[in-house]
Length: 271
Image (cartoon, rainbow, N blue to C red; front, side, top):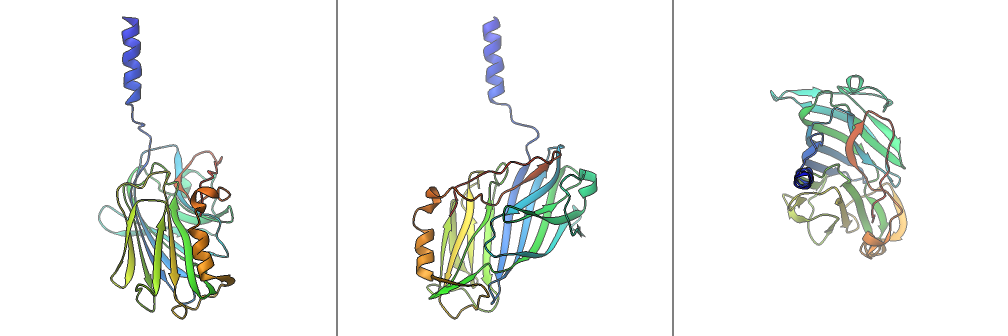
């Protein structure tokens, strides 16, 4: 009898679902690329937060290669449809309490880039709008211009859906003048409505990452960040198999911050 009870306990434990796991229901990103290579980005996050030990949510934008994040604004869409804009702080204190972080947002410098942070206040379902400008997203190379950027990875628990929409501010995106490659997750990309849609096909898992490589013929953009490499060399470098060869750089992550200020940096395979 004791053996049977023990087996039953083990069986039940195998099917226990953690009750404190936060859930990312969807992430959608709109990327409006400007003529100088910067981009205005809008992210919409739907999250169900159930872990009372967390004090904030953050999305990491690490290893920014001469890129900067400016003009951060975070807002929440309330249940009645109204928009509640958060206060943007000049300095973000990860040690502040959940109550102190509620209704506030800010940037934290980390790992050669930033973490976009905001306080969620109460547990439950939330829908956030995050907007910011990222400079030098597209860089100028010999023979054309290119963007290679990881928009999301290490999303805690994964996300049910991830969609990315890219447009040019001054011109339509058309093939073959613009070429696109997507790495790190199962997605379908297509030229649509003068831009490019990258739509996840199935769930975006915690081990997935969303890197988009765009290559532009010369003359479409005038990037401020000019490099000596050729465009074709950059394309070849990012298609050379470095997805599984280079483990030197942690990719961006998105998760809830625990009440403790201790952090774990996860090294992931990188382009």
